Length: 234
Length: 113
Image (cartoon, rainbow over the protein chains, first blue to last red):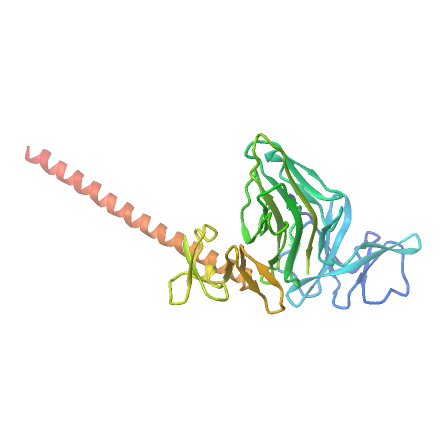
């Protein structure tokens, strides 16, 4: 994944003005972006990943090809704090990103995109449950967040899911899985079929990471169904 | 590898009275400082956090900030790489001395012959 950065300082000179504060700006202008925070400074960056060594008050608009900012953060006291951002368009404020409430997936709605590891013949369905189906011999079902999830401020990762049998594993990793392999594991939790496929993982000592759900391997004679209804942090 | 856990499921790298033995591949290649910053809750056991949340096993997760553990692991790997490099340099020196010895012995034998 490329790492594109666009830095700015207050007014970008491109028609964009970034302001911050807990109350709505009194003199809004077209294309003004309002960051709802009393801790934000004037420096901001549009980036695909969090910038390294940010100054206190730095605003980051996490962006992708299809969105100007799917989430907005302010660097405060050594950690990234999720905040709401709105843009003044057509004479009214339009929310462009909401503060992260910890919900990563809930019956089709998701904080960020989820992927399945297609290299192991897994197919993914994203609604109404997050599902990985693999029919390949030795194939595994792997579901994972497209980007690192900001975990700072949360203590527990919860997962509601089920498999045809055997259970599955939930991981927080430092890198995305590839070719059916999960690597860079920071934390691991086994969710057994007997427990109903739901459980919790303590993430209180982790600041960020990919959330990876792993099920498998599958056999050649049956379809491996792996369904997840909700993934969230508290 | 074998690790050891206390009643709070915190990990240790050396056996001690009161610690239970656990076999796991999770920490393969990791240094003692990294391992001892983790909690290992075996399957069938539960651990209750300070806020009352009950976590069932198997769960392997850091209790010390992971960034600190990662830094310790990186330092360990750098030191290990430096030690291996020094060991390789010593071996190369020893091999070079041995080759020179053999060469000198052969040379002496030729001159005597």
